[in-house]
Image 1 (tube, rainbow, N blue to C red):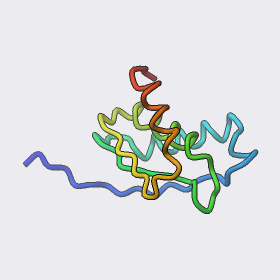
Image 2: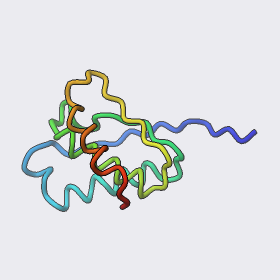
Image 3: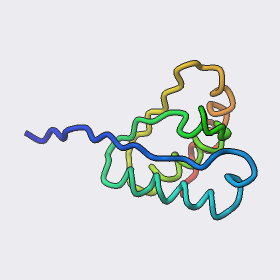
Image 4: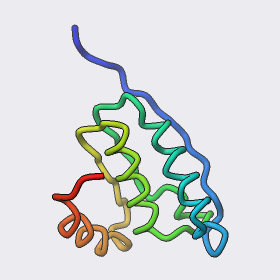
Length: 101
């Protein structure tokens, strides 16, 4: 049939803090995620780089949203397993949801 098998991709992250906030580091992460998401109709992801690497949840979410949108994904499933860090992400989606890249 027309069923596509899921693809699992692992992406490394830059350690959070000052070095991760430079324009070069942000573009590096967006481009890396864009390549990983290429060709996917749907992307399932979560707090990439926010555990041991200590990155900011909102920034990493925005990077992945931009990358998935640019890669042509029709759906982004963002999994927040502890639900403690995503209250601001919901507000971001409501505010930016109608915009385009």
